[in-house]
Image 1 (cartoon, helix red, strand yellow):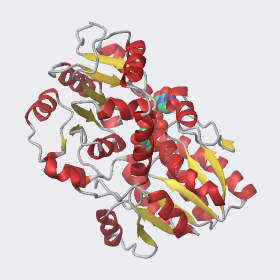
Image 2: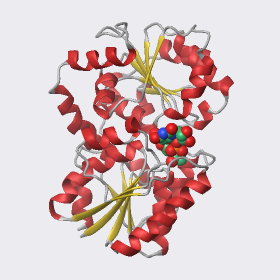
Image 3: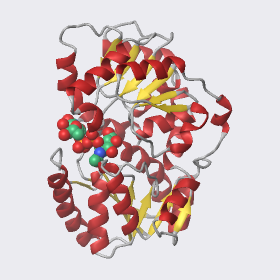
Image 4: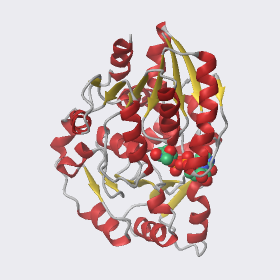
Length: 361
Ligand code: UD1
């Protein structure tokens, strides 16, 4: 098989790493990077540490409005698909890079394999929800991560070529988590102390926080309320800052009153696994991170209106919170968790990559 894989944003590099490892054993893969994420610590670091092959094409599209970004990607992807004429296109998740690939491959009648299909948070105004729905409906094969995703597709009339193969991110987490165990804790803490030039976060207790969704970050009042909540928590907070909120964080923290929070640049995947695993709790609006928190059995507070990963809410393993200072502190401090729910394998057994390649063949 000759497969074109289209990626562009940080979580897609992690997903592609797991599948490419199996795919490239026997098949040809053309890796296309749209350039949606382009900073070293949002892109290059993942290619280097996850051993992802260098992309055959990088469109270098960068940041733009949704329409301009998606349209620019579409033009570039069309040229590549016409040149390469692959047997199929692989798309991951729900970003603008996913949507651009879907619309182009769909019109060129190149079969689409959509991985992480069928998940829904039922919030139609989120760009990711729109991207998911459109891609699922254009795909020839929908590889879904859970029973609930099968059901979501069925409700929308998609029942053919739907394969519940588990979650490709779980493959990656198991594989790279093992690799982090080959390094000592001192290694990670010394890297962190270098990054934040402080020794306050040691192997003692800390929380890990990440926030990047427009609904939480584009209004300075909302973001300030979230930051205040984090600052009022019992333990120090390690906060890797997504580039989209760098400027706003500087503005909010000019008076220097946020000394419970340690802001650092975005971390690589191995660092994220290590610091997630060892956190007391995780506070995040990232879809991927709160799912990883569940697998790592670290309770998390999810600052979203709803999650596409509803299974992780069972037993309060994850709880939703509004972007509000008091609600965040309350949910972090007062949630009672039923740890028995962590034993459920809602998202497969970690062999998703192998199953997808077998089915595609
Ligand atoms: C995108 C995805 C989101 C995913 C996230 C993972 C869409 C609609 N959203 O959101 O689903 O959870 O990636 O991180 O595709 N920026 C930089 N450098 C970079 C990348 C981004 O400075 O390398 C800044 C730019 O100011 C840009 C902003 O971040 O405008 C947002 O980037 P964008 O790719 O549009 O969306 P994300 O918020 O990263």
